[in-house]
Length: 161
Image (tube, rainbow, N blue to C red; front, side, top):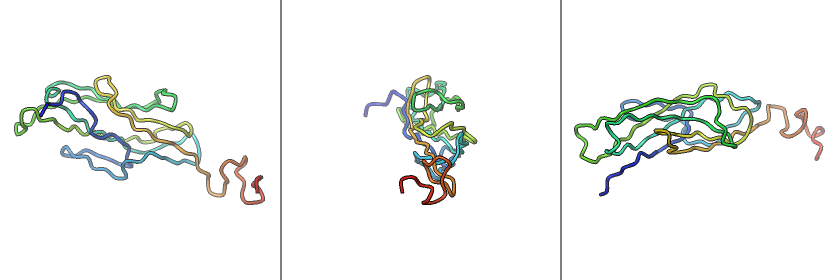
């Protein structure tokens, strides 16, 4: 077996809620890529989850992580998560064994200016390891018809009927 030499993301995704406890990730409502809002700008609440595979050769070193968000044009949005970690091999681990480093962070009232495509981006030591794309959709408020100026309220207000 050839030992791994590069860090990589075993998993990276959005969830309704996630937390890390005792080295495990607990997830509710994970792996979605669509959000719907009736008005914009919209405030979204969600969690970002990453599981980083740290090879033996990258342990006992300080690593920096960053989760940032971009729009469809690649512009970075306000708001990000960052931190650092250093893995000390478990005495029970075998020589060459990788370590799984879980991270989870809550984004509360994260502002999405308009409908469109967005991405969460996981960076480790300044390099992109993973990207999770998601789409934000506009939905009609109750009693409104999407795409009709003024919202419309029924068949008589819909110009194509």
